[in-house]
Amino acid sequence: MADDIEKLIRPHLVGFTGYSASTSPDTLKGKVDVPLASLVKMNANENPYGCSPRVLKALAAYRTFNIYPDDGQQELRKMLAGYAGSPAECIVAGHGSNTLIDSIVKLFVGPGDEIINSVPTFDIYSFSTEICGGKVINVNRGDSFAVDVKGIKSAISPRTKLIFLATPNNPTGNVIPPEDIVEIIETGLPVVVDEAYYEFSGETVMPLTTKYKNLIVLRSFSKWAGLAGLRIGYGVFPPLIAPYMMAIKIPHNVSVAAEIAVRESLADVDYLQGRVEAIIKERSRLYDALQEISWLKPYPSQANFIYCAVQKGSAAELHLQLQRKGVLVRYFDKPLVKNSIRISVGKPEHTDAIIKALREL
Ligand SMILES: Cc1ncc(COP(=O)(O)O)c(C=O)c1O
Image (cartoon, rainbow, N blue to C red; front, side, top):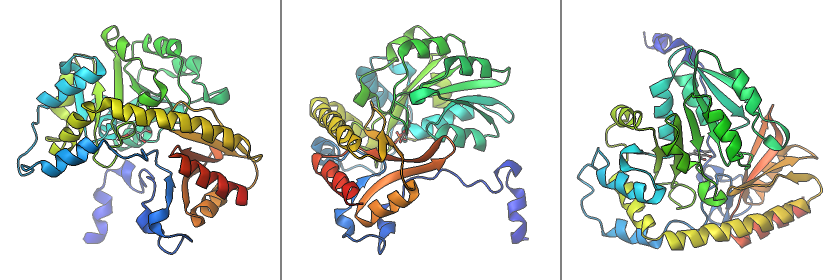
């Protein structure tokens, strides 16, 4: 009977509610006092400058979208190798780095296996683990969201399959000191260092991938290259693991459009780097301006967003009030990210808009 169909779902997924991604501005009709076109979108860590103009031109000129992309990612892996400074055979690209996280978990984690998460952090690590029937072992971060290295080491069990580390971390924006990452890698367990925001921090452990055969480094084109909508990310994997990642990925997992976008972005790195620098400069102006708001506590950030504790009133309410005024931010109200908001760094006019809106409240 159709009504019984839910009984056939894997039992651990019955009632599973998924990942709560930021809402699209289209869903806000009637809920905001400004035209949708003038919304200031500071809720999804997107690049306000867009992608390289070379990408737009090349996509408009391309004619053979009827042909599948190269499933072996030969050219793509070579191009990414040049940018990452790693051998092409160690690189695997995906439809956003999210899908690589999902494949890594699929490769290592079975029912009852464990991953170690340094929380608060990006929710996709636990999302993918739960879908695979794995168990998430959360180790709380300490002061200023520093990773608790000792805590991570003592959380290791015979069932630990992966340790996830985001640096800079989402939503808190802080980086992990390299010596802490090394200490965790030296446990010998597979360690995934997620560097989705690397271009905004300038700090990377990529050179360590030649030394440690248990280190995976993930990167994304969503943020620095402004390609969030096209979906492209990549990882540098140990030589023994990259072929498995290629084997288990969904065929043709990177579109021709995304491959073109990578080529053109990499041909325009100086232009894109200029935009990254503008965002870094704006991050510092936004941080200073947020510090002037007595009831907000912004945390220093090495990413393209700033996490703030809301010290008076409710963050959920603040998010709605800002939304009314046409400024979108992300808010959190979970045990480790209580009553807080995350503001993506935009252009100078976006900083002006949010600061004006906050002052008016
Ligand atoms: C820490 C972290 N890793 C990975 C991603 C996913 O990026 P992508 O757009 O490449 O899937 C994000 C996106 O917000 C992120 O914050």
